Image (cartoon, rainbow, N blue to C red; front, side):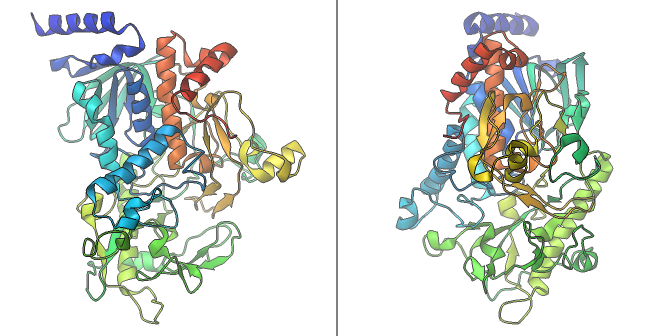
Length: 566
């Protein structure tokens, strides 16, 4: 039997045995010499949304090819190095069962592999770093290990093909249908063609949207268009939130781990952000703009201190990922903190809408900013005792999987966003704006109820300063839902978003971009593709037909997807 005959026979066998949604018992077909995969769903981007979409599709029997630009899947908590930003109810409500399973697996990994104290081991809500920003401040490598273990059996069986260090380069599109995506290996230069019934854009910047000519928006909208209370007077497609190159450090008191002075240190040490309302002074300072009051607010920094320093938030414990007091004595030389602060938010350019060379220059400049922040902390930062500098701060490249000590990828807060069949506006989720449109006091209302809800979230609208000069925009929201219509492009029929690229505005993206919401978006998309294929429907008909929509919602609820707030 020839190779081509073998693959043809194998595909017929898969189709005969599968009979629909359980087609995943056979691996995606591989055409060998032609470097072509044919599968049920192609997921471009292996971050949280991509992983959640893959897990949902795989558990429902689909064949999946997923690509990832770096060599680490996981996105925000792994390659970007950011512990999860979550709401206060996360342990019991406001997230899908699978997201809480992810959190449980992370905790279990520590119990199984780290020498915890008895108290830490017995804690049902164990927080490795006891960071103040999150109830689960964990090391990037642990989150990576958990996700890889979760997908390992699917990858071993061939139901999942995971192409690490691959980027999408071209798309084969026929009208409103994507037929194939060509990707390129960053290691070998090979360019496999990925064919699928559905394609999922789970990239951090919405990279498939321009490739496939899917309609999308960027930046901020005008108030005259969206009627949003906090929108600007004019639209600005180039107005994007800052991105950040994160890094991890521990502190070894009495030692000197000062790095070489970064080339751009002088520039960043003296840099004053030009924002409206004004930033209070140099970026490299422990005073920043309070996001709500817009007044100067002092922060503290003390590697040996608690959660506050002289009444101010201690940045050291803010995103601390290892609290050594929870581990057996001697296991860690010091606590470890993840540095993602206002002081290393990069404001001088965007990663969307620019050439590859310009984006690379901005990333290089953002790396200089982060290294300059570290050098400033080691040499010039004021200490509580009146001295300057913390030379015992030690960069930890081993924890980030890089040689320069910085995260593998920038922490991205804003993406291209699809022009969706339904766009979430501030009036749907923002407390003040919703009070205005309903004519009722805040105490008597909730977020808009979406009949097509496929998920939930709970976070403030939290916009960091932007590349075009906006200071923080930060205000309260109600616990909200994720409408199915926000996941459906206005025209494309087999391309779905699974990250920060759904149908939100510049403002509402600020509450839909967080870890548990992104996971929920990805899971909803993976389930939607599975349901559509099994029932021979399109995503549009699932939403448009009340009976199908109700059936789909029951389908995802049975799989642990929360669609409403009780």
